[in-house]
Figure: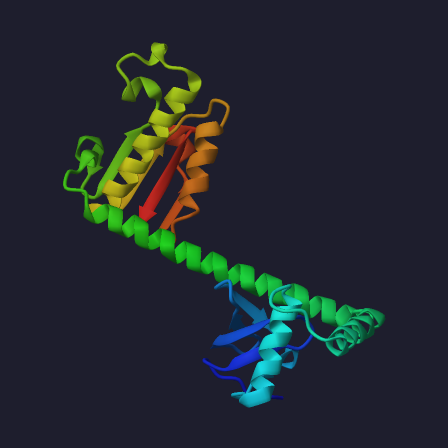
Length: 236
């Protein structure tokens, strides 16, 4: 099996294109194409390209332009060769093993992109906490490092009856996010959010956002004290 290293220039064996190797793992070779995306590939699906000179370099560049629909049309010999290669590829059906490899490659690529997005989200959240100077959780503090925040709209607005359901929801979510930022900035240990039951929309959205954090744990608050309408968030 060929050995690949970051920086190698490669071509795809079973499809048009190629790129530069950016990362090598036990399972995949990640290749960055001309769109900037890292594509996970099996080693046997790649051909490492040596530096080309003279006629070989010109031939390769001309072929790439032709296959992409760019540049001056090539002589018919190239057309016939391309058609023959396409016909040969179409005549060989993909095996279940190859299909599984392709699907695994796509899954690996998605996981890699998700990991990058989570890291980016975490960095933005941490940066936001550095800009906060006040601690609104002091008014909700029940013990040192612990706070209890009631998100019922009548606790957040002086005229809750004048608000539409959507407006009330936006105010509640804004206050929840603000409290989370202040909790990080002030190194809180635990914050209990009382969101009530209702139709479950507020609770579902809060849980959805809490799942995006990597450095917390959250659980339903004790039913004996809050019923089923509160969530406890513990900060690492």
